[in-house]
Length: 193
Image (cartoon, rainbow, N blue to C red; front, side, top):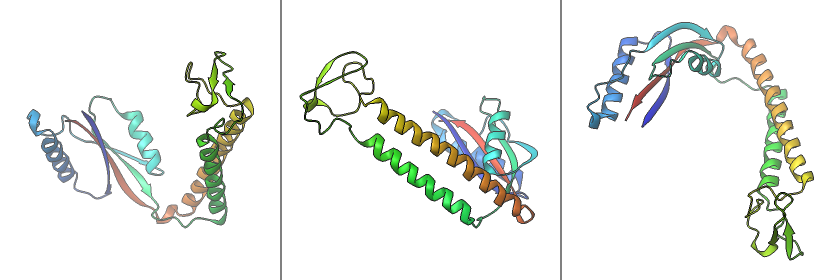
């Protein structure tokens, strides 16, 4: 099985000790195969990313995809005190998430009076007493009306907008705290078990 692990270390960490730890870890995980550690040494890239998320993307972009071991620096801002604007955006995002979950989770035709429901896609007539999901049991297409699907899509678009606004607000807060940020390493290792 292919395994990927990430771990965060302080900037002044003993790199040889980290390498020994992960070699030993991989060897213990794969002892049945006679593994003696990672197949490559960790590549410590001296590049500083703005945050941990950016460091993850950086590693993904620079990964050779052959059980590559990588480490890159990032700025850690600690616990950022959220602004009122951020808290409001997060509240609105939670509200939208709840609406999506409620709308998607409801079986639309569960309490209809009609004996049969028609599928718009394949034309099958389905006994309403057998409807257990929002999908046609014959062609598996969604049975819900277009207006319901458009409502769900609208909620998802609103969620996407809110996530972008939240990200922008978080970046603003990070910029304010840049002087107090500490530098850390994000280390990604891969091994086989």
